[in-house]
Length: 443
Image (cartoon, rainbow, N blue to C red; front, side, top):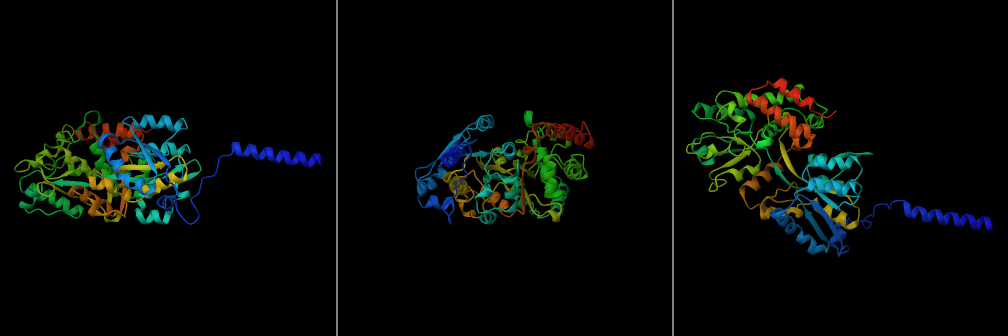
């Protein structure tokens, strides 16, 4: 009996030890329902979900307003804390094992550093992947999938985004001149020649940006990488697995060079590109008559247009056409990806909510947000620019995040900017520029 009692006591003690030291398994939503459905059924009322991210000032207000309806319907309180020093503060919180429940990352590269350390909850363990694939094109899911210590995980879902693959033009003058919006790269090149034949300069280009001079050139490189080679090669390039000196990257750079450096193609000529501020570059479009006609940039560039210029009247934009039909209609994007760090039913509900268009509907209607979700409506947009960019993203066959933002800082915000600027200004040749960028890649 004593031996039996001893065995039983040992089992009880062992069980208590395991209860203390073995982490609890993730809490699953009620069988047959998702956490989001439970939330809308009122089963998570009174719960609090903490968030951190870069939204401050007006953006923070718009974010809070966009989730109010969800909070009212579910009783979940989403407490968002924004910081202009987000990158530093979130690193301290996560490394100190005290992260918010959900974190909003404006750069997926930063999120990836925490995924590699096993700090992020794999959303595929509880989210309905079929529903996710119905609401995002595959590219968004691909970009949200990252390598963890034990293999790939779905690290986040995308919320507010913006598109960069737009070519802006002075609409009124453009229409009066009889020009037509090009649908193909060949048509874009013909338009370029037609404008020159009429005695004008086709392109407005400037890459000066103080300490960040050159970033606008890297955007062009990223656009052309997506249009001249595969998504697989783009991803390898961003990771350093495909060298800048490779034939694929040199081809993209050559396409850009042929367009920029041809006689008469760019306002001010090649020498002016590196010294013209990116925000000043499109301004000659608005002179009468225009001194240049075409400017490729993200939708934020409209803040540099004349205050009295009206979208759809004084200016408009079209999608930068593909170079090779094989690669479809890619769009270069930036945006916010939401990752989960604490696994509870209410946190699951909120992250599921962010995978739906309803999570940004209010912000879209207020202006300043583009939805990547298929269940969002173009009718939500209150201005022509946002609606047009949203339509461009909806019609994309693939999307990829700004490549330089994903590369190590020494490259993406270092040698890539610097060496492209030196090449554009003519102080070094293309082969030298590409080799310099490769040499800066961390070993």
